[in-house]
Image (tube, rainbow, N blue to C red; front, side, top):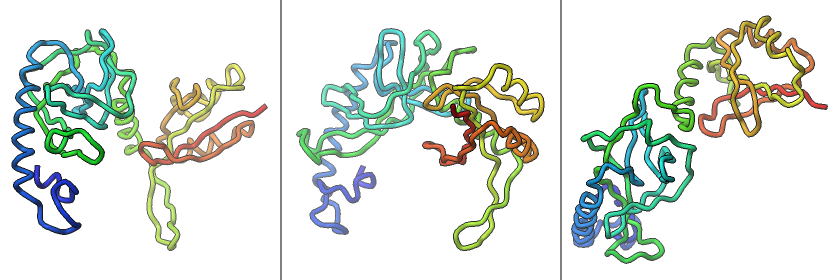
Length: 255
């Protein structure tokens, strides 16, 4: 815990000074008490905020909101361990997964949390640590469409199989980048055009969503991108993905 909080103002008087281990020891005893309360309050098979879900591709997400039989998840965020052992969450939420698509295991996982220095909740009181949380797994054929991490990893693996393009940085140094994923906005798209594009380019588009309904694909060959650019009815722009920072080629038809 001292390592997690090596620059925490609650433990040091000035930057680069030594940690006050008496304060750390006192807070560690609080953490042990809170963690025991957490274990006591999590003995049922019911899902709880802070539980961990192991996905089929070995990624993990955490439960951050529970609405009857629907569990919303997240990659991370702020999990606050309260004195009564319960967890509160602050941060972004994904659509999640149904409780019927998961099952609880007897295994444990690591949950990063924060709690209040000296047990007093106030501004700047956060002490960072980790506790053991319960681990759930998905059932066969579970609906994972509400967990974007699964889709993101699948798409990343596809990108890694594509050809690369040589590019140059601001200093003139060359580097290689895999082909960008392609998005075609559905708005104003004529009937039958997406089928024609797939036949001519060999690209396999799937329905998706990026702020608006779109078709998505990952080109494998540079030739496919060149064929796609030959469709002159499109306006073509480039963006960087918010999460991965990878290049995205966006095609749209304006009216």
